Length: 425
Image (tube, rainbow, N blue to C red; front, top):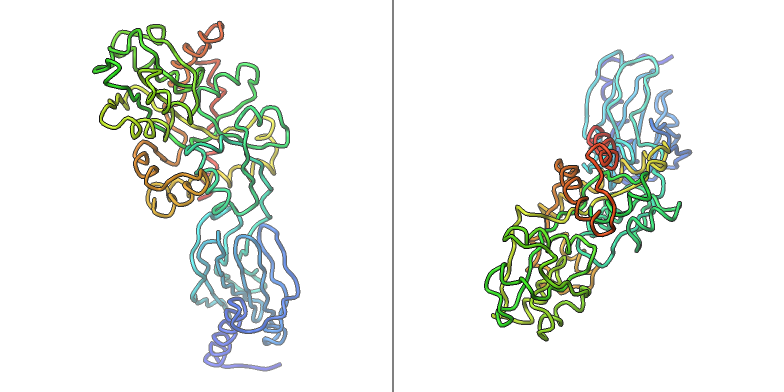
């Protein structure tokens, strides 16, 4: 049995840790013997550690990051190299109960989605290597209105921040509710109210985007004030949040949507209807109103009151899907990814905007004009139930049913996923 002095022991451990870090960083060749995707991570074997004074050194790699561990006399050390979604790792070693910390890996975020990389090892008598990541996240299938700005945080979250695989396709919550292979869907709260009548298992779990609408009218059509719309034609898409906005705005001047003629159109046709004089005003989600304004130039007049209403596009799932532990784990991680995506939209728009223009095939200058009408707060808006109770009166009138009470609507909003996502950060 070899006996080493304290100084010699410390020198050996420093060299060993440097070798393990170099192995994990790819600076030296390592023959990794095994990998493990388990929650705690486990040390594999490598040529770097087979003869490390009776200890073992290894590396594990998964979606969350890479962790390398070394042992000497039963004490453990770990070095974390964060991957795309790992957090900063740290290296530590202990011998005879004395521990030291070293440099960790580069920092990422999304802790808990793909695992935390490289917590420092400590103690003696066989203490384990640091955590290297968790079980791979489940694949998720998401459907949205992929022609709107509002869905784009979902796309960015799926492509850049979710540690698992997530596909985003056309469909929204109608597809979610009719296709059991779909896990999540995004739509405005108006559609949540419509669909939840026949599908009481629908759940709103997070707010994706809030959009401030506006009515764009033509001065030459005789519109100088909002009240001038009485008896005139307004183009929008009936039974949507935009049509609801028309009613809400008209009520501020003593009118309702019954005092105008609602003309049906689309995002593409509304600007033309206004430019040709077929209608006096238009409203819809962006960028259609801006395109209409650009078409008629100085003849345009805009009416917007942000205190009256904003469209609330939410992420939805079903009670059955949320009750599946593995899917729920993935959905919690996806909400955490969506929070990160929204932070980018708020704080680094120069990174988010190119993603939006590419997804929608939109001109960058046009997006710049409407960007201020979008809002990404990274939460489930706290007044959502209030909005649903008030709005259901209008939605119910469209279909001739009785509005639901607050108690009846309350189960539609489920904040438990958000709470779990925030707790895991």
